[in-house]
Image (cartoon, rainbow, N blue to C red):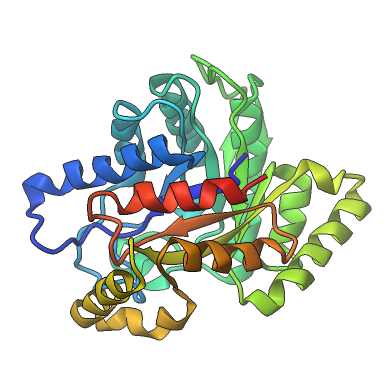
Amino acid sequence: MTKLGYQIPNFTYPSVPAEKLFPAVVQQAREADDSGFDTVLVMDHFYQLPNLGAPDEPMIECYVLLSALAQHTSTVRLSALVTGNTYRNPALLAKEVTALDVVSGGRAQLGIGAGWYEFEHDSLGYEFGTFTDRFERLEEALQIILPMLRGERPTLDGERYRVTEAINSPAPLRRVPVMIGGGGVRKTLRMVAQYADESNIICGKDEVASKLEALAGHCERLGRDRSEITVSYQTTACIAPTHEQARAELDAYLERNPRARARANSVIVGAPDEVAAGYTALLALGIDGVTVNAPANGHIEGRVQLLGETLAPLIG
């Protein structure tokens, strides 16, 4: 389960041309693999998100990238954080996740959500629909994907998807953990309780307790043991050997990417002791773990290594 995940959310690095982009991503994944992270995750988007950059900044398709990273890592699980259900037929997604599991030696994880980035959908021709539509599609998709990942042959004649005795061969090498992303208390967390092994929530720190309470309530109603579900919390960090270095690297990032200023106050920034203190406080909220991204300086050699070595001792 993901208790310490490293997410790579951006592919725009200063002084890194296109031909050196993949090696810069590999460097981060390898450092995560070596320093105590249990999962490496990438976003499933085709355009960069508004709070991270402009739409035309580089974005690498996640399942191609994860399969390539499988050849450069050895222990971390590999996942999207999270797959947009609206972008793929569910049977195809089951095959893609299975392929990732096979090529990684049993290290695939399915992260999935209902999809939310309307501009991306409209621009590329993916049906967006209403909030209700997207969640109904997600639930039908899970009724296809999960059985296919478990060696079954599902049949579903749904409103949005149809399969008949869907075959998935070869099967995954190991049981693929399923993470549902999002913090909606009525729909998303109910689906977590019903279908998932993990929940990844994005919310204010003052909302964490209510999210955990809502998940526990859904588990009770569905007869699910809440302790079976790992809950991680999405975060952003900027770490360096000294506070001054970390602050300078964050400031440089914000200077070249003003769009990120809106969320700058949520970044946990500083030397290792400062970052450790920030994450110790977060873990005290009752979550089981964290996912961490470092868009400001993750591309700088050694920063992900330092981040993992700082945070791994905090995770029980």
